[in-house]
Length: 371
Image 1 (cartoon, helix red, strand yellow):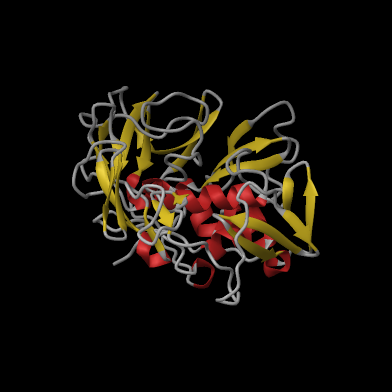
Image 2: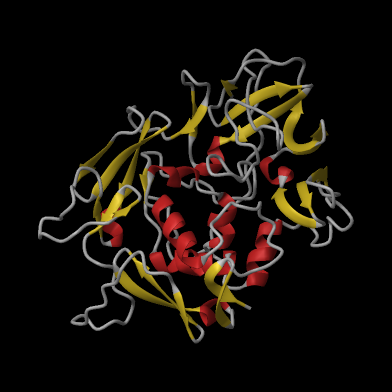
């Protein structure tokens, strides 16, 4: 059964083109992917934000199994990703998508990938961040084929959105690419409306209320003559009607938002009204719902998304008898080309050269790796 996670992702890349656009009659057409800075009941302010990112991009297909199963990421994979995200320059990613320092980035994304929110984790970060092994590889992957200099002379006075020659929706800020959506990969075309570049499935006659496509794979909206879409299927999800409008959700049982329960080492959480099962035990974690402050052996638990640590996470290669507990509040520090930080009460050391970065630095962005 396929599950969300990295599966040591940099070594086992899975890629596939999205299928043809869902056919939708105007009677069922409704809301979808918003223009980059516009308002919509079902989409974020830009296509790679925390909730429903990159839909329609060249992303990993079936990011979540039909039953809503999530495999938490491997901590080492998240460390590699955050080392690159906080060190590499000119990445085609919006500012603020991840924390600026290594430790905060790793803690935040590791927890997100062990929560119900993992079902909508950025396809760009899943495809590129978790699989890249260098700044060049990460930058090239995230560009989705767009030219590095496509934003030359653009965006000096603020973000500018455009369609490039191959139909990608591009956002330029200070002459740098800060967002790419590869519309043709999702069976869509790039159009510019009111200064915002969006991916559209085609033309339509008049505006309509938010609704799911007949196939159930997309949220649709007819807006100013263009049929916009949010591709739930790119995440392995389905479009589900709700009182707040259509949302992308799993096909698992219905549930109440905010609830989480344990089934052994599996946490069962709720995402957009449907269950998501997080296999905490697969990464040596416990279910974090209702466990209290102590585990069955009297040890302290630390929350990791919907999961919790069973014991301090031991660095690879550490002596099983050695004690390396630490204060989670202690600031990360550099030790030569290694970055030492406290992960859920356990000291870890990350070698920056693991992803082609040469040194560890402490600056206004905190402790991080650098070229």
